[in-house]
Image: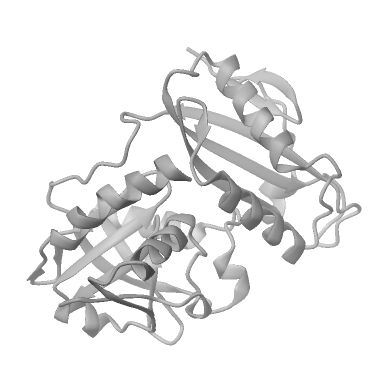
Amino acid sequence: MHTMINFNGNFFQSNQHFLNHENRGLRYGDSLFETIRVNHNTLCFWEAHYFRLMASMRILRMEIPMNFTMEFLQDEILKTIKANGQEAMSVRIRLTVFRNDGGLYLPQTNTVSYAIETNPLATPFYTLKEDAYEVELFKDFYVNADMISTLKTNNKVINVVGSIFAKENGYDNCVLLNQNKQVVEVLNGNIFMVKEKNITTPPVKDGCINGIMRKKLLEILEKLDTYTVKEASISPFDLQKADELFITNSIVGIQSITKYRKKEFTTVTAKNLIGKVNAAVRLH
């Protein structure tokens, strides 16, 4: 069955072609996206997603339409969910914004278009999977430690090639490094390291995506007396000395890493935090 895609407020079936070869997202990666979890028509951490998108559009010098309010985009997302009959489900939303057609590297316009897609999710809340989950370093290419790397642009070639490398070598994920050989993130999210009661995640200046779940988890950790939390550079060697490693993103919530090289990790902290993340979703 084909789902409905919302393109600038008009609905198209997912098998219809409504973008052409001049699309700047295709040509130059001149595009941003947000991946949002929606539970029974409630957008999780929507305000944080919205403000990240607006800030990213400004950085890329895209013209923000007057009607691009939080309420407008939320309504468009909910209309798309309704068009697909998914109001009573948990869904993954991809909201893509791209600069309109025209020009070579230099655009002819800074106006934008948007597309909204929906995909069903298995559960309405975040669950911690107990399965084995092994990661390895991806060293073929490096992330630049600059502001562009922190944005969710469509320029994800490193993540694509890294995902192929992981699959070909039997890993569940890969750790990305920057040109200074510091740990940045994993292919699909931010990374946190636990050593005793200290929790560390790479700082945004090292080039990691300015993740929404990363932001929310840092807010949760700051309020707890149980842990000392900091944003600081992490070396690959540090990973092997950790007690625990886990990944965060808006769709999965928290994913424990069980193995890196010869080191196996516990999942105690992740188990403790997943309930707090679910509580934050309900409260926000």
